[in-house]
Amino acid sequence: MKFSVSSSELLKQLQVVGGVIGPNTVLPILEDFLFTISKNKLQIAATDLETSITTEIEVMADTDGAVAVPGKILMETLKALPQQPITFSINEETRGIEITSAYGKYKLSGDNSEDFPRIPEPDSVDTVDIPSQALSHGISKTIFAASNDELRPAMTGIYFQVDFNKLTLVATDAHKLVKYTFHEVGGEVSTSFIVPKKALNLLRNALPAGDKVKLSFNTQNAFFSFGNTELVCRLIDARYPDYNAVIPIDNPNILTLSRQDFQNSLKRIAIYANKTTNQVVLNVNEGSLTISAQDLDFANEATEQLACTYDGNPLTIGFNAKFLIEMLGVLESEEVKMELATPTRAGILLPVEETEGEEILMLVMPVMLSN
Image (cartoon, rainbow, N blue to C red):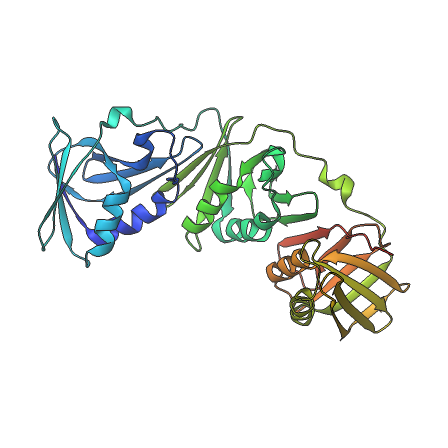
């Protein structure tokens, strides 16, 4: 089997697919790309058994066939080559692979394509269409709030709630929560499932701008299909917590201020906060917000005052600065508002100007103030 391809085109596709190959694979074959040639098209696949990505590229081939190619050495070779046509010659008996470039020849040994794990096919699936930009936005705005705690598997992914023409993404780690909704979904289905964080990070990096993504799903897997690429991932089999129950409804104290000023001030004040709690204290009165932090162990403290609009009773409340800084970095509006109730209830962070067709709500739990 022999085929020719542009080195840079091949590298580009391998970089999309290669993100799925982990550093510590459970089987040696999982370090490989599966190359399948059919009618002058090369299909490239990689998997870690939980997530799989396949993509396609045009090549000049003399025959159809398949081989598993060691990923690391192939990627390093292509990165070191300037753009040029390269030719792969594969001995189907020994699975020896010879790559020929304008500079010379490189030999490596492939593996049996039959040993490569089978990638799930869409079977008994429901399907919706989503604009790729909206999906990419949704992932970026929620993924940071997902948990890393393997003991609570449901929270380590993002909760997808499909409701006909609306999709809501939710992520929480019990300290912070983000709920992002957008409305331009084409579908006739209402359901929910949890997608792992790793798969969504890979998806976000691979998504093209201005395209549609076909999202199909059954009880075990989600299939994201766009352009020549398909990402398949196993869903997290767990029950997502009732997130609506933790969103406080009656928040009479409304603080409005510049997002950038608020974020920059928190970044400075956080330097002086206790490194374990990252606690900053917000002291809100009419027309002024005082942000302070102290680390009693090192006698460090800092205070800043910001102009704001405040409608409510004077309030002193503590938050983890790291969480607030992260949330403000994800919001895009010039001004943000915080809805607050008491020092012991969660604060709600919202953009003042919403982007048309989408809504975002962020919740952050307070850090209890010590007397």
